[in-house]
Length: 267
Ligand code: FES
Ligand code: FES
Image (cartoon, rainbow, N blue to C red; front, side):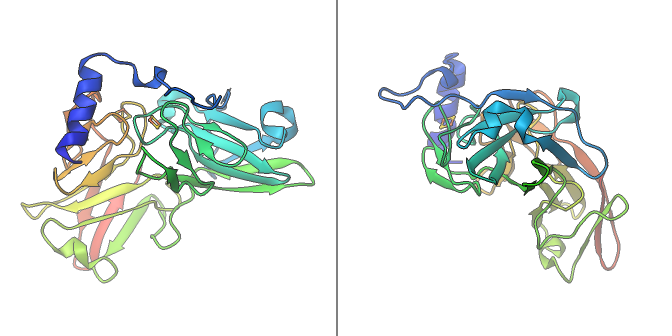
């Protein structure tokens, strides 16, 4: 993050200004999508919604925010219904400074400062610059059940197998370089993780879920730290919080190394 962006956050947070409550003049009437509390799914990671039970979602142009039990660590999801039999699911927290997202019938829109995101999470209007995470979903028009897979991952990243994520040096040569980093969303876990070869030659692996309000952190090469785009918390490459508002560390995973590569124990 540039120093000016960090200064922006410091000024806002230091003065107690509630950013989320300050829509600009002439803002369109976009509200955060209504919240629906849901339990965590079973081991398959599938959240199944009978759409007709939820009028805010069943109408074309509607949307809801799925909120999971706090102790689960699962971020809120914005479920949108843009056209008949078409649904899209994104993370529900704006990557600018963390407001809950709304939907205008075509795109995800942040009520606070009007960032906009396409249905695949791509930023289409600033001030946000970081995309929202897209979640895989399928809709069965016969049963009217929308299935959302919160454990899906990046198609070109290895999956978790029996609780382990194997990253070979052949496939990820950067892991042999001091200061090297690999990140991705492994299928079977569903959240981005970061794996680092540290300056002392050891390895670390940490989760991307910010413990403040569950935004996804990213690696900032200028800071050489992990930075949360929502409220600018920072963390070392071993997950230790170095600047709030987060007050606890990122989740850390156990890493083992052999001649072939790195194995991360995913719990
Ligand atoms: S919090 Fe500022 S645009 Fe979303
Ligand atoms: S969600 Fe607030 S600092 Fe990360």
